[in-house]
Length: 134
Image 1 (cartoon, rainbow, N blue to C red):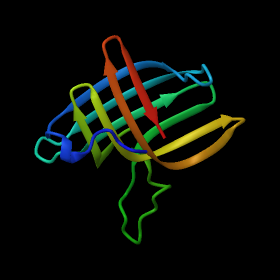
Image 2: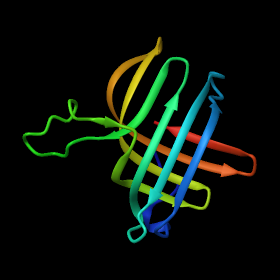
Image 3: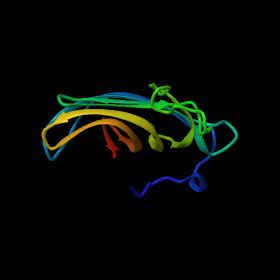
């Protein structure tokens, strides 16, 4: 995904708190979402995230694990809803983020249960917003 924001474009300290429903224009399926992004006050491009998307056949949530020590058990110790020290850029009503996550999908086109890397973009314009998650 080509992010429309980068740390080079950003001032540190941005935050975004959004929730609601979005409809996939291609499938017309409606999803609920919660997105909370906080960019570090000092370092642009790093921060914390809470990302959750839920629809008829899928649930996606960000999370964090124990780190990368040889003794760590990343899947056994994974905790959902909240990531820190991840790429987060927030300026006004535009945001980009990348984080660890977990997906449970029973959609016939994409059955999956397990860990993923989540990349997302959010842009609000007037009374509408665009949320892209890959």
